[in-house]
Image (cartoon, rainbow, N blue to C red; front, side, top):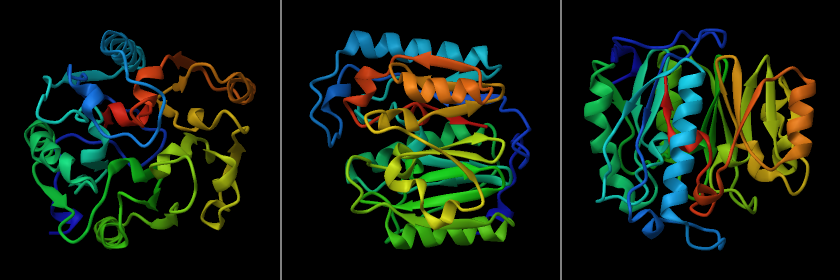
Length: 274
């Protein structure tokens, strides 16, 4: 099935000026600390994670989004990171196939909630793997990360689905770049033709038609920000990038993300926005 076959009953126009109206979120469960992580920042504090997640949801609502709050999914400790399960475009939804086997059940768990807004789905199939965190929408263009979680087959399948809907894309191989799990661990689209990018990605030729806002060494985690309508959700504690973005005219909503950072998670990971 091509993406042309997928008919959303509600979706966001391809223009970057068109507002998001909805988001799907799922709180972390009490077994959140049993999820996958590649960093050694300590065990997350569950109560603090719940508090940070609640503040994140409140920020999305401040940006004008109506939230669909999914229940805890104790079968999948990583399930709060709903972004990895689907790609939502102006033409339809695409279900992913996560690169970590333990997360495969999360995709079926998101199908029902998405069916309330989308009539049909494109899908990534074996042997392809694709995590949503490796897919960066930049206006009418998509960047697809090739990573330890997203393989070339999965990226190729997504590119075909996007092309069938008239959406151009480019691959960005992040294998070998230390410190980032997904492409969106290192870049974010801030609107107005700007990409925020860590030093290791700032000069990538795929980004040459964008204005790149570089992230200072030591503040790499802040690259995973999200533009939500008139605001930018931003990981608190990164003053140099905050100053740069504020000078460019962005209205930041700083959010504490310490407990999710311990589990390789960032701001974009915690919602599916459309």
